Length: 163
Image (cartoon, rainbow, N blue to C red; front, side, top):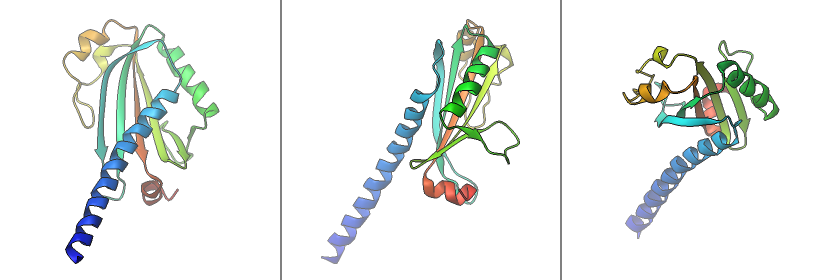
């Protein structure tokens, strides 16, 4: 009986763990859907999990690269005007523009990088490489921009940032 009960808890733990991983990705996708919409084309998407060296700051990130005929100034202005209205803010201690939104689901952090010249974009990103096909496709657009978002659960946000 003891073995069956132990197996039950192990199975329950695995199911809960797998469910929470899918849930993190769903939360990120949901936040992307709520962002300001620009007439643009998704060029490339990459998602993965990450962790700090100590394993305390676990989360999921999603990078989406877009191409648009909109000017870089207009892309930047749209995000900077819309994000504060939707509850996003830049923490005073951040030295770069990292937008943060914390709610009961957890902590979302986001950057928006805008490029006029796709050739200036490094193929090697922090955790992945852009495919060779990215550059010919990106060259068809006036502006290329990256929206990079991370998600941490409330517990991970507390461990990482004390928030």
